[in-house]
Amino acid sequence: MSTATPTAGGHPAPRGEAPQAASQAGPTPHLLHTYNRKAPQFVRGQGAKVWDAEGRMWIDALAGIAVNGLGHGHEGLALALADQARQVLHLSNLYRHPAGEELADRLCALTGMGAVFFSNSGSEANECALKIARKAATLHDAAHPDAPRGRHFVALEGGFHGRTAGSLSVTANAKYREPFGPLLEAQFIAPEDLGALEAALATRPAGLILEPLQGEGGLRTLSNDYLRAARELCTQTGTVLIADEVQCGCGRTGTFLASEAAGITPDLVTLAKPLAAGVPIGATLVSGCFTQVLQPGDHGSTFGGGPLAARAALVFLDEYEARLAAAIPALGAQLAAGLDALVAASPLLTERRGRGLMQGLVVPGRAGELADRCFDAGLLVCTAAGDVVRLVPPFVITPEELDAALGILQSTLSAMESPSEETAS
Image (tube, rainbow, N blue to C red):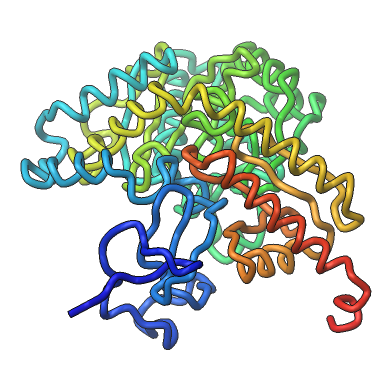
């Protein structure tokens, strides 16, 4: 007979029992070693907290890398998934189902886009966007053979768009790309350099892809002026503008699309991470005349937009529209104020970046150490671009939990600043 696992402080865990097969002995050798995983096995969560098999609790300011918008153990999501599992899990895209159609309608209503293609991840969503841009160039050339377009892409330094072949081609970090070349042709330019942007678009690329707020690239926010200039230049040159909002979209920065803050409408927008609250999904949103570019047989996905993922995404949108959209700006302001106070107080920090519930601290030379020490102290964060500690908590995190996370950061930084710690390290 199993017993309920205690939490930190001896209180009972939220519900359920720890899986008896859970092991802390070490990772199985049968998982391909593409990640350096931490030792504990997490077995349950509630809201913005998770527990391991030994009953230790962490505040989750990482949310599965910006995925778990509804946090952990969300009752409405669990009920919807169980209900859908009792009905039909999978049909294929040869047939209609109500959840997928409702989800498409609601996303278009929220964003002003014209149509959606569903897939299973952000990388896949970007693959679809790149294919649309390339086919649009092919259709253009058929209609205007005297003014051909290129098939290459322009992307930004610091940008991350995925690890499948097409999306990897437009991911800036060479260490990710180089072992797998040759890939699609891409030109990388510095963010905020309007001269470089104008020159790159003059080469008539198939598309420009950018993140309005870079995640993996170190929580760098593109200015509204830059985004507006990109929109104008893409329109002038006939370049497809792709906004990769896989990490910064779905409300994380305070508006449903991060690009809304600049008042622009991209030609294509990609979404994923929090859209189905932890169930794999990707979405490529298409505007205007681009809705007619792909025709039956041009693209597909066996699992994309299936009943289970669509049902999960509808729960997320219900929660977002009912309460989270109004709560995120205040939570983001609280997080920004807390991080700004840490920057002012700690000599180890040089800058806060980001907005909403997607922010980071620049910790030159010691970001990895800070993230590891926070883990030991009961806080989940991760690094980005080497010197940045990233915080992307669930949208359901409470003000009290945010304060507790900031307190752990403060005490951890204080320990790192002490002379005795410096000597010991």
